[in-house]
Length: 268
Image (tube, rainbow, N blue to C red; front, side, top):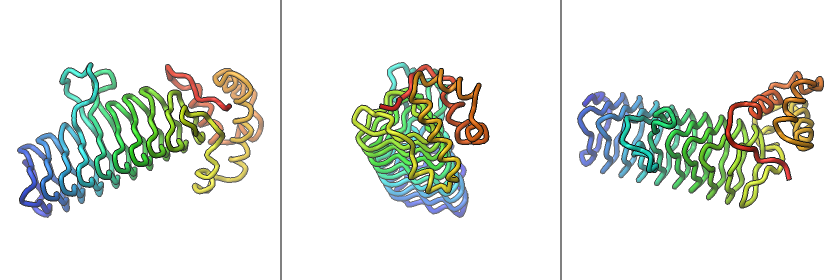
């Protein structure tokens, strides 16, 4: 056991031998910290939380009561192989959140980036790769092997099917079931999620230039005219001047032509 002298640990907390607790950490009452856990500096684990498995949590992350972090995957194929969970810095992991370690089929690792907000009751399954500044609203569930790029928002009570990719800056409305890949900056709504357009509110909040948003709109309309991948290849081969100069447009086209076994949510 390696506990920095500056850490504050409630007498009722259980810190198993082998755990590493960084400088300035706070461990609340009735918490359990497993033997392979490593906590960075100033991590705050509030009461009744369980941190177990080969789990690393970055600096200044806060874990709220009754969260269970680093337990084994909910996957019948899992046979006890050695896997891990890596969580970045400054995350807020709210009450009753569950995050599982990886499996052999996903490279043995689940990752969560920096500055994410995982609201109460949300779930991140085995082998997921969650980017930075991602928000999972209350009771959102992300199934195994999913990729959520930076600044994705998944609305409350929504589900993301296994192996789905959600591109940078996309937003999923509440009560949606997402069964196919979502392009960067896309807007998904409806019980069986449909691509309804672009996340214009998110783009404007991030200060994206009007010219970039216009270029994205033009490309979105062009993609709506046929098969997504065929349209993306055509746009790369014969880009308009605005599209050729837009990093946002290239991001969308590269995402569509990237590796994936799934189809895409397409416009109505």
